[in-house]
Length: 475
Image (cartoon, rainbow, N blue to C red; front, side, top):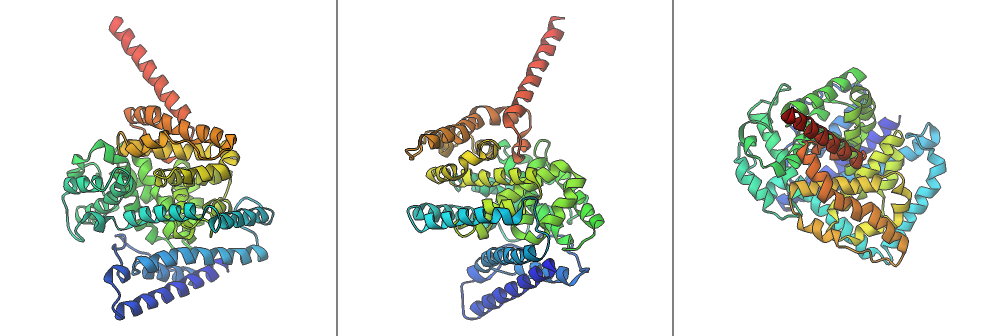
């Protein structure tokens, strides 16, 4: 019943928005506002929905593909709000989702949200407005990347030329402009060179991809993952059988492995969580449940991507309306997923707002002490900074970030900033990125793990190899 009601509400919402969009178009609204910017993902789409709820969901998904930016953003945000409202009533009548006690946590969540709302209309109004503006800027940059750098709407294009154009937008924007390029190039190549074959090989290895710079590889592979994820997810319905979900997930993993360079598969795998959580929210539980059995490591990448999606989702762009941290608490199926989600939220919160570090300082004030023992914020900071330094060597914004001193007079905030922000940023620049790059392990920053322990193991293996080589030479 939960799925039926949520699907019906979503269907009615998207049809209303589409009708309003078509009315605006008839009245002469700008095509930039009322026309869909990007084509839907290639590949087959499920035809036979096994339930009424699945049929409504599939119809909704097809209509969303026709929405221009304003209607699409409104739908994603409003659909999440209404879905959460349906969940509240379902939790009253049935068994709550998630592993954390729903009703016992609800008072604390409400208090946290009210505190954010009060700050947003009070002393921190400018801060939260700026954060929303920063997030929207990056969301639009990735979504409308072809238009931003002038990629033709159809046909093959010169990857080397648009690689330079993607990097020409700005040092700060490189991460997302290159991810967008990877998305479009992978989609176009999969269509033109491989006819959307499930046996496609070498999309980011062969052909024009040979010219890619080393610094572009992380985010080009993230873009590959976006392309593959948005296509394979169309083959599922809300009530697909476990066998069918397993088939589709194994296909996604196979395509990521067959079309990625060694050491970058994880960057592609992580995008499944982003696409599913941000654009196919009702499918999250079905996908993650089966994925945990199919490939536990891919499951971890999935939840990291879902954490990124929680931050970028239009429903959380104005965090005083609905904090992504509260959404993570509501949606996590277990403690491991919850911590991965929190690290995933910390990732973009850090890198998106790096030019305005007082935004992240506000997060440290609010959540730093609570998250310190779990390592979630520290990991998100370290991982995103490592990625930024790899995509843009000698990143000027990162260097300025290292010099920031918290504005708070609270010594505890200064201590937390040093431990959770300054130290992992410094290590990302001087230790994590160089060692992970040397060992072709940059995909590991797309998972929630102890990066110090990882690079310690890699350094130990280096020393062991050096010792063995010296003994051979001496012997």
